[in-house]
Image 1 (tube, one colour):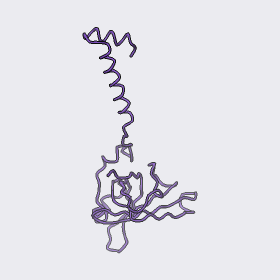
Image 2 (image 1 turned 90 degrees about the horizontal axis):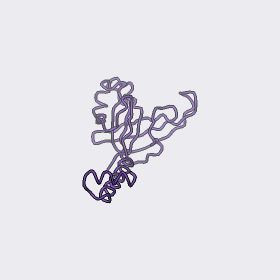
Image 3 (image 1 turned 30 degrees about the vertical axis):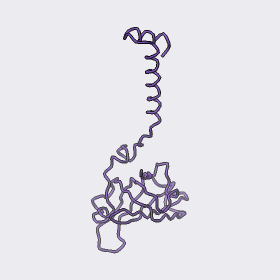
Length: 166
C-alpha cells in the first residue's frame, strides 16, 4: 500500500499511520511464508493429495488381492532392495523397469516402476531410492487372483513415490 492509503486507513480508525504500516508489512511477510509452504501435490485419477488415500497394509493386499484389482491404493514401508533392469520390449522403446522390494510391519512384497513406459509422475524416481528409505506409494494393483500357488501375487505398479515424512 502507498503511504497515502496507510494515512487514510489510520485516520479512519484513529491510529498512527506507522502502526498501520507495521501491520501491513507483517501481513505481507505472512503471505510470503504461506506461499512458500510446501503443498501436497494432487495425485492419481482422483487428483487428491496422497495422504487422502487410505493406506492398505501389505498383508491385507496379499490376503485379498481381488478386492484391489485395478484400484489405486496407498502403501507405505521401508525399501529393502532396488533392482533396475533395462527392457528392450514392452512399450515400443527401451526403458528401465525397477523392482522395489518393500516391507511394512505386516509383510513384504515387490512393486514395479516401469520407467519411461510407466505412469509414475512423481519427481522421485525408483532408481533414486536406496535400501532403508521410508516411502509412501500410490500404486495400481493389476491381477492377483487368489490362489494357493506360492509366488502368485498381484502385480503392483507405481503411480507416485513420496519419501515418508519422519
